Structures are given as C-alpha cells and as structure tokens.
Length: 440
Image 1 (cartoon, rainbow, N blue to C red):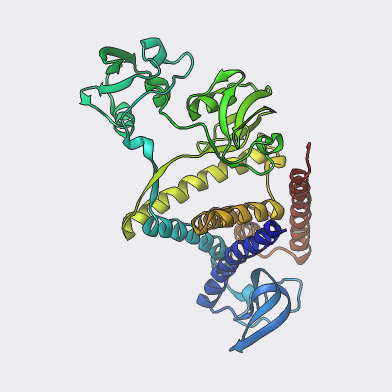
Image 2: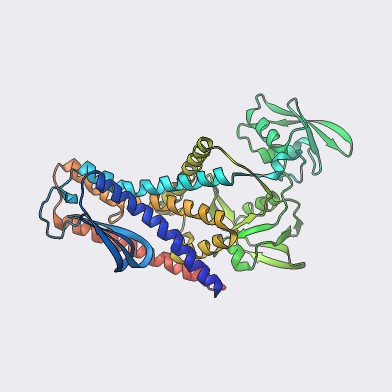
C-alpha cells in the first residue's frame, strides 16, 4: 500500500508542476499582449481558496493535477463583448504565440532541470571508460574477432596511442584515418600486433570488442517482457540460451539477434539460480533504431563530473535536443504504424514510473520530470484539435484564407480532436491496466 501512496504523491508532484509550468507560459504570453486573464488556477475543479488581483482570480482548486488559464473571450462559442483585451480580439500572430508559449515553457523547463543536475550532481560517466581497454568478450562474426583479438586481451596501443583507456580507444577509432586500425594487444604477458580493417560504418564494439560491464540488472521496464517473466533489479545474468554471459553487451547482442524468438535466461536472484523464458518485443534505441528488447538496463558504476553554469546549459540543450528527436521519431512511427500504441503509457504508467523514481531519489525524480516535460511539450505541439498545435494549425488556416472560419467549422474541428484524443486515452489506459495484470 505504501508503494501506491508513493506513486500517487509522486505523480501529483510531477504532473502538477509540469502542467502548471505549461499554463504559466500561456499566462505570461497573454499578459505580454494585453489579454485579460480571468482565472489562473493551481489544480482543477471547485475553487478552494483564492485571491483576486486586478481582473485575475488566482485560485487553488480541489484536484491538484496541474492547473489552467481562463482568458477573456477565448471560447468562440460563448458570447463576447468584443473588448480589445479579449483573446479573439488579438491578431492571429499574437494568439499563435500565446498558444506556443505553453509548450515552449515545458522545453525550457526540461533544459533547466537537466542543467541543474549537471551543475549540482554532474554528468554521469561510466567508470569503465577511465580503465585500461581490456576486452571482456567479442561480438560474433565481428572484424575484431576475425582479426585475432581474443577475450582477456588488453589493448596496449592503438594507432600509436599507448596504454589507452576505453574512452581514449573509442575516441581513437572515431578519428582514425586510413583503411585499418593498427593495434598491439597484451595476452598472457606476450604482445601481438593486430590489424583490424576499418569499415565506413564504425561500430566500436565490432572493431575493439566489449568492455567489462557486469551483467547485472538495474531497472526493469514497467509492463515489459522482463517484468512479466519475473526479472528483478539486482538479478545477475548468468547465461543466455545456454551460453555464458561475461559482460552486459553480450546479453544485449543476444537479445537483439533473437529474431523475436523466446530467449532462455539463467539468472541468480538472492543467491538462487532461476531459469526464465522471455519473449522479446520490438523497441527503439536512442538513435531510433528498431531492435528486439525485453526492457532492462544495466547496473553500471559511474563517476560524476560537475559542470559550470554555461557548460551545463550547453550540455542540457544538447541532451534536450537529442531526446526531442527521439520522441519525434517515436511519434512519427506511431502514425506510420511502425510502433504500436500498446507500448505507450498513460497516467497509471506515469504514476508507477514516478513512484519508482521517487524511491530511487530526488535526482531520478527530477530527471523523470525533465523527460515528461519534454514529452508534454512535443505532444502539445502536434496539429491535433484541442491541443496547442491544433490551435496553431487553425490560426494558420485562417491566416491563409484571410478570414475567420465559421463557428460551426471550429466546433466540428474541436469535436474531431476530442474524439481522437478520447480514443487514444482509452487505449492507453487499457494498456496501463493490462500491464498491471499477470500473464498478459
């Protein structure tokens, strides 16, 4: 029961802040253009407490999930006086800026949250990157294996760079010129020169082998095949399809090359070995590549390097843009049918993720808030009626026609959008509930 209360409290905080920031963006833009704001509410539903300043009633409402802004004359179906401070009395370009201001604030919020983490905690860097480049295992049929590199080899030289760490070796591969990499490896006290052909597509793992990353599970995705099969955080992965696992990348390779067939996974949980059978599903990497996966992340040892204010915001912007491209890629594949709606999560899924993030600590919760804020921004910018993107689309159509559309057309526009979003909502809610049920 405590998990339920933690999830409810965490999702209230996360969604509440993100939606409030979104509405504050609309509010500030409306004030900038002289639109009369009648209500700025923290929460929805009945008014519990408030104070009026000028024309605006600043209130706290009963349901704390977010908030809303009510602008004078923002509903074309309601009777208007035609006052100059009404929303619909303003030029279309001003109304478009007011509409886009909400998502913009969510994007800014994501950058600020990421920057805050980088300033006060630091950018996480896997510890193995600063260790000697010792090969734990090799991808099957890789150039490294064909060239003669073996598990246990230590790379002592790469293109003239002596005793590289993994980070230095990876960077050397990225900047290498010529048809091949010239390596020297140390094996059982002996040194062997090795030449690895350098293809156009540079897969570092295929060229150098896998580093030693313990095959231990850190997080298990909610509703993913791993969770349904009984895999838990802290489980040690011993073998995949009866082949011993020496490092985490070996496990990833095995799942991705499963072809969607069930995998047999031998794990050690609390000192006891268990055999699990897991059915992989298709998902996306951070590069939007479609791969087979089961929904787990590795437990990696990390160092944190704090950044100054300007470098932190620079890196936060890069991280936000990269994540934004990934979200847009998934959205595009949703509309083309390459990604199923069954993989989407709704309020229940967000609540469970929020609860888990809250248990892991403040930084995990802040990171989740940044991710949700960016998702909220991008989804609101989609050209779907009712959403901010739908309002912008409507204004663009009216601008192209050089006249306002009729009230009837606008009503139909909104009704279609509402019906579409309700269908999506019920599908996602069904998926959320299904993930809570065993054997689904």
